[in-house]
Image 1 (cartoon, rainbow, N blue to C red):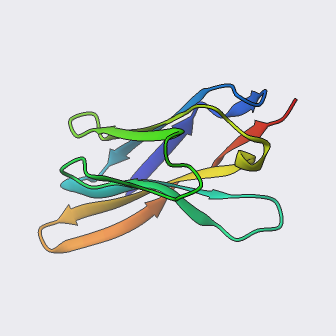
Image 2: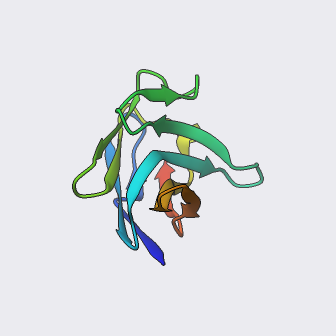
Length: 120
C-alpha cells in the first residue's frame, strides 16, 4: 500500500505564491514519474506539471514560466512552486505518482487533493 500526503494549499491573492508538497510512503520499490494535476470547479482534471525520474519536467502551456515542479528521490517527495498566481489557477491540485511496487510492476496513485484559491 502506498500513501500520498499533500500539503501547502490555501488562498492567495493574484500575483502571490504557494508551494505544494506531496510525500509518498509505503511499499515503494522506486518511483517513476511524479506529477500535479488540477481540477477547477466545473471542469475536467488536467495535467499542470510532470517530472520524470531523471528530473525532466513538462508543463501545461497555461502554467509555463509560473509553476516549477521538483522532486527528491530519496524522500519520495514532489513539490510544485507556484508563482504569479492568477484567479484561473483556482482549483483542487492532486498529486499523482507512478510507483514501482516491485520489479516489473507499477501502479499510479492519487493524493486526496489540496485546494488552491487565487483571488483577491
